[in-house]
Image 1 (cartoon, rainbow, N blue to C red):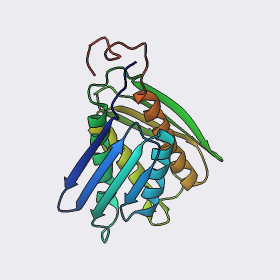
Image 2 (cartoon, one colour):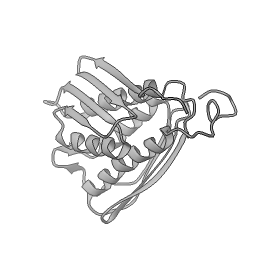
Image 3 (cartoon, rainbow, N blue to C red):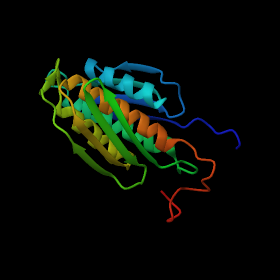
Image 4 (cartoon, rainbow, N blue to C red):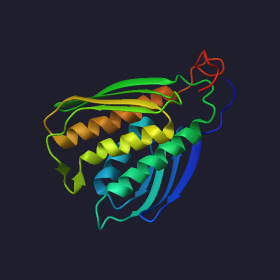
Length: 199
């Protein structure tokens, strides 16, 4: 197979609530440079990038004096757009990814399809409404907006757990690994892996 160019994209988004610049390289080494003002999200994004072998840079300014909702949501939007742009025409990729990740007592599963048909399903409940200063309902918000903008079908399932931090961490690790699996090249694939001839 001939040498392929790294699949990378930079996305910016400026609203009355946030100002975000995000760069991701799907063919990276898990390097991160994050400045978002939301420490727990930065921890989760670091895990996502490391387990997904993605290089990720995010600089975000948001209305954190209100809460982290807009910042987390818009980072999800930007990451989804960047993933979609980086994948380009998706020629030669595996398309599907399915991963279980345990984190001590917790078990999460992520199944995704780089289908160009955005859909999101989340199954699971977190025992605590907050981890530190982070609202746990923002996990759903982040992945929902990411799936819509990446135009992927995404199922995130938390099978069980007791520690909310562990449960969320398992979700982000599993997503990174499932995305890496789905976006990897399969030398047997000619064109795109769809009978429609396009993804």
